[in-house]
Image 1 (cartoon, rainbow, N blue to C red):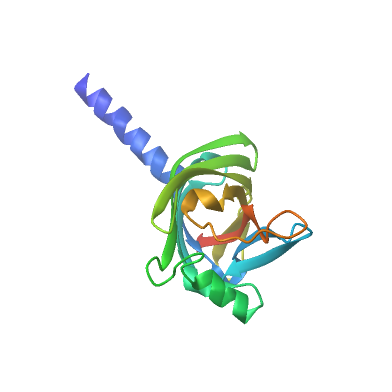
Image 2 (image 1 turned 90 degrees about the horizontal axis):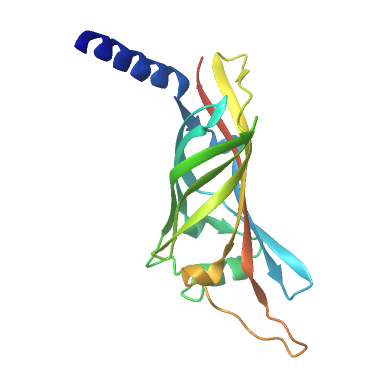
Length: 195
């Protein structure tokens, strides 16, 4: 009986290792983007250019996703040098004290083929909150001419920057504020692994 249990355990471990594969983030084909309301009438869009990440999952089952990401906040780019400098200051990200933001996943669910959610802890300015990303894609492995496998997709969420202590603002004479509180985050991600 004991030997049967050991065999079953070995099969489960073996199956898990086959199903969940380690993927390397391809930064040259990925992006970390955000958008926030500006003066009530439009949106300011930007990206972080320096980031790293690891992921382990089976593309056929997004409930297997485990991921960790680190973003160098000082790499923020909104195509306006003065605004970028303000974002790096203590009014916003306070890069000198908090040079990175991180995401560590805790659980994942698949809701349909290529659709799912990824929940984890997001840390900005030393404040950690649980957030959930909506996953779209990541379920179609492509074999490249260079002998590797590639998979990609999009992860999106919306956070309230006030929750993380990013609270600078100014009130407009006509009503409203300069910067909205809700920040849309969009990750366009491509991963690869040896075939």
